[in-house]
Length: 124
Ligand SMILES: [Zn+2]
Image 1 (spheres, rainbow, N blue to C red):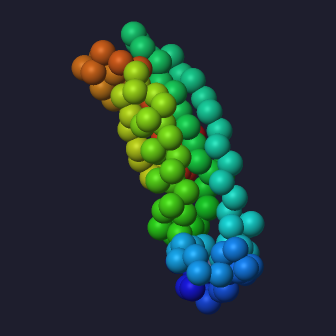
Image 2 (image 1 turned 120 degrees about the vertical axis):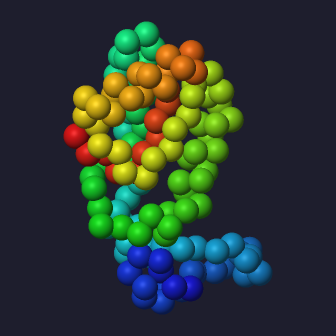
């Protein structure tokens, strides 16, 4: 398979049990080790509600996010299923500043819910 990030070819080790598995992988082990998924959580109080910030990566990587498409989809699916009480927003790159917090506070007031924002890369 081809890695979506570094474009190199890689092989997935198979054993007898996974010999006929057709599961696709989009990222090689070297890229996975270099850019690990590490969720971090942060709560920011808004005017009337809260902003729950989930960041998927610890740092801002120069990474093709499509290579982690399966993992990111699973994370978003988990929060969609388990946290229906929040208004969910998914953004690939989010910059936390006064304007964005004010905008999310407005969204929370309109939806009358706290906002759960999932982002891949968080800039402060
Ligand atoms: Zn790679």
